[in-house]
Image (cartoon, rainbow, N blue to C red; front, side):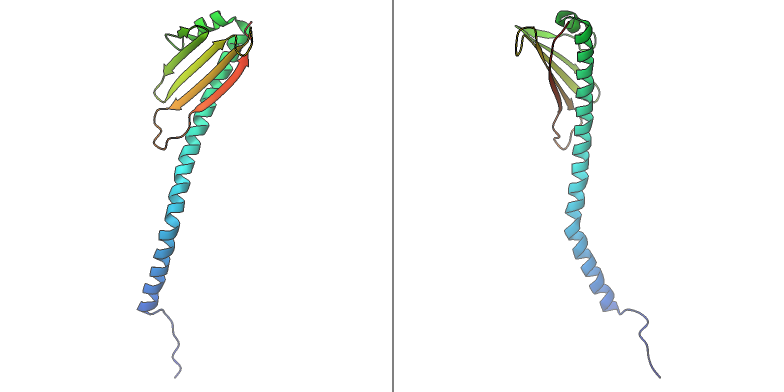
Amino acid sequence: MIKTKLGMTFVEVIVAMAIFAILIVAIFPAFMLGIKLNAVSKIQVETATASQSVMEEIYAYSVANNLADSITALSATYPSPVTVGSVTTLTKTTADYTIVIVLTADSPSIGMTNAKVNVTKLDNPYGAQPGQAETILIFR
């Protein structure tokens, strides 16, 4: 009578499980890094999108208004602007973000205004960079 082997021995199962466990332990940190990078990327896309949206709002004001009127209009959304010399800073904190707008008049040249927007996410456990936008505008 010929005996055929139909299954695996207990030792073979233990060896296979040990090899599988070693592979999982080696690959697990790569999965965790991927999850962290995905979260950081998501935060950076959100803040970049928010800063671009604020910059488009400022651009819309620059097309229709002069700088002083634009700052007045922006102060309705971004309360208590602070002006020191030719630099005006507007800040607003929402539930998710801190938005800082810096408008520098006559920079880099007379009649031009340097506009910078910085958006920082408040819930940022991974230390993702804030979203930033900067441009030079000529107000009406």
